[in-house]
Image (cartoon, rainbow, N blue to C red; front, top):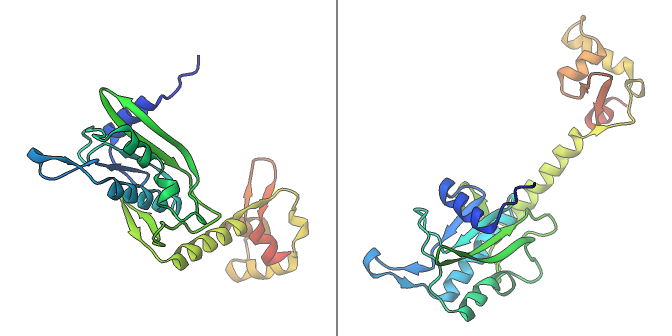
Length: 222
C-alpha cells in the first residue's frame, strides 16, 4: 500500500527541519512575546506574494503561514474571510501578467491551529513580479530584491550550458572531423586517442556500450 504524504505531515516535517532555500515560515502575529497581536492582513498578503515570487524566480519552494521562525506553530488568529483573503494573495498581490506556477494552495487544520500552505514551482515563462512591480529571488534563506535583467541573464546562461552538455543519441564519433581532433589531441599528448580526448574534456561519455557525444563535441568537431 502506498504511503501518502498528507498535509499535516508536511507541517510536521517542516517544523522538524526548519527553513531553508526551499522553505519559508511566516508568522501571523506581531509584537513582543507577551503581547502578540494579529498582523495586518495586507502586510501578510504582501509577504506571501514576495516569497512566492522569490521562489518562482529561483528553483521553487514552499511557504507556511502560521509558523514562527523558531518552528513554533502559532496558527492564524484571523476569521475565515481574512483567511480566504490570504489564500488569494497570489492573485491579488502578484502582477497578473507574471503569475507564479502554484502547485498547491491549502488551509491546513493542525492540532487546533490553522496554517496556510503554498507550494510553487520554478518559473520559466516570466520573470515574476509583485503587484507593486518589485522583483525578488530566493538566496539562501532570504527573499532578496533582484534586478529582472540579472534573472534573465542567469536563465539564458543556464540554458546555454544545458544545451552544450546534452547528449545527442544519434551522433557517432564517425560524424566528427578526426583530423581536427587528432590535431588538438597532439597538442596535449601524442599518446591520447580522439576518444580519450573527448572524454578528457567531458565532451563524451562511455555508457558501457558505446561513446555518447555531447552537443558541444558536435559544435567543436563535426
